[in-house]
Image 1 (cartoon, rainbow, N blue to C red):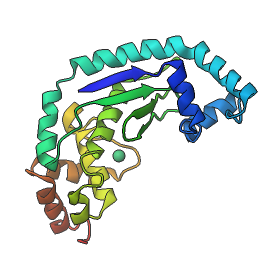
Image 2: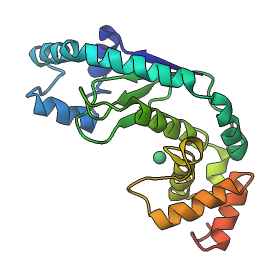
Image 3: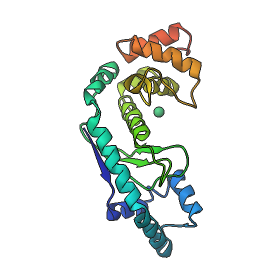
Length: 216
Ligand SMILES: [Zn+2]
């Protein structure tokens, strides 16, 4: 279901030229750290390509690990998530793994026809297993983005809690959901509600009843 691609240099250069990678705060920080700026200008762009080539072996190893993880994951587990949201996952997703960031947070973004991942701990301390859980988290978000369900539930915060209840960690990867920037008491309650509801609307109704949110 998920096709992981490491971007060949030309494609990668294309992403930079199109300002897609340049707009990433994480990559910008990384380049600043390596004294590369204004990558749209040729001399800087050449420096950037050298930086990419110098680190490509780390990315290749990382991608091999990520592919192994993807191959061993039981995607049948996700049909329950589809039923819960009443929406289907896309059949194929291309993931471009770009130069990562040395921070502790993995950057993942869905650009419609491809998904960009800038792994944390770049280049030597990358964490493919954890990043895979981030990919699944983002994938689950795609089940409610721009969908009728968002017209019924106009509460972005609610979706963040529900998606986090599935992954990272959560129902799909462990016994509880963990995420630093969410209210952990609330997350625990919502995690239980997600486990014990048949679908997202039922879960939302229970949340409103428990006054976890005001209805909209
Ligand atoms: Zn999220």
